[in-house]
Image (cartoon, rainbow, N blue to C red):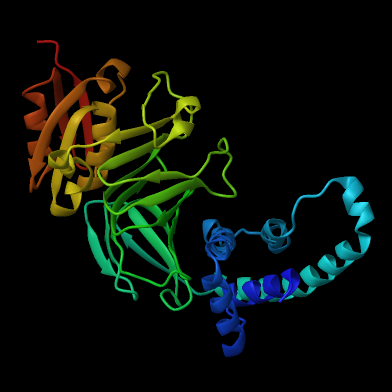
Length: 354
């Protein structure tokens, strides 16, 4: 098969338009060489990103342009003029493919399932491929109705813990968030991407994940970063006043990206990142502003704390199966200069000057 034939087969396979014979051809081609497998995975992730990041507002023409751009090598203007016949062939090919892609897109938009965990609750679900997912309070997970058959891609807003079931190489497990895409290379990881938090965070307990900026984000371009067991990757959406550094032979790119923080975590302290699914809250030098966001979601309240000095007070402590926010704040008050009042679902925190 020449390049144009395999491109057509790959697109038909990814968009579920291939017949049994074409599916076998794609699988043989993918398994023939590691570079083929890598190319297929990149192509698959690109199409899934387009579908899942903003399924209700994606412009079909724009989506196809982005997808086809991956297939067409960049050429100089002069070389394009020389190869006018090849250009014509590619344009014809993509004209045919666009019909297939847009048809698939219109079907996919109407077949999205959503699972959510409201503030004050945690939800555990089992996906059709056997993957276990715990959703933290104030989170939602979207996936297509044919998940597990020809795709294993989900979209997360909020926080979730994933225990990935084994799958075929041709169907990678992918998690899309607003700004970043995570590809699972292992089995267990926590992912935090709340829209009102100024950072993205993933923590790997077992295996490995790859993280990269998605195709539509407005953030600075980044290289793919691999996060290993007992590592935490945190990416701030905008530059912070403090600069974080991490010296590692594994991730050289971090030297020039001061908004990226990677930490190696002792196994005894991993519950700070995944303990929430067992109703455990762990704070290790977090500011009251950071803590308030966690407590708002966990106890379904609104916390008012207008003093910037108060917001930056740091606190360390852990809470297991604490039923009310009143008990949590009472314990925090014992070690910090704060006082609080509760009226309905509104909590007001002020300084304690006594």
